[in-house]
Image (cartoon, rainbow, N blue to C red):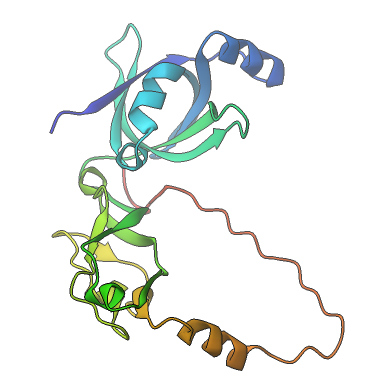
Length: 222
């Protein structure tokens, strides 16, 4: 499989002002780190990275970062992307160095295939698990994991352990994690009503915010 190449240029200027000027020129500030080497500040062409990263597969791909005008190159994966909430353009990218064959941890989307017979019979599909946490070689990250729901009747379900993973891909989630359930209309509302605790006073709790990265490299890699 041909490498997905991203051309990078060394970045000498840092700071908010310098980054704003780069973005006006169609460039995106980025850093490359990991692999037992120092962190490098670089810039990449916004149009090029947008085309490569606009798909879910692109986000989990192994890239070949090539320094413009030199023969220097290194494989890396996208670890984090900062995106402008209004323009949806990339503001900053973090790449982490990896090698082919190196095991990485990624989050991959789940896609559904088929129409459940239980839905045709009047039930509804409750899609609980829309992604899986997996471990695999850096160059073998799947685009998506397919769940075939065509044969499911009302009351049937699919768990993470039921899904077929490509060879060499390891499931990191609990195998009992629910992916899809076919419910009878009204059943879920009744369960939630029975499980709801009685409110005896004014209680509140701050939500826990969990930051979700794209690729985490196993220690011990290059």
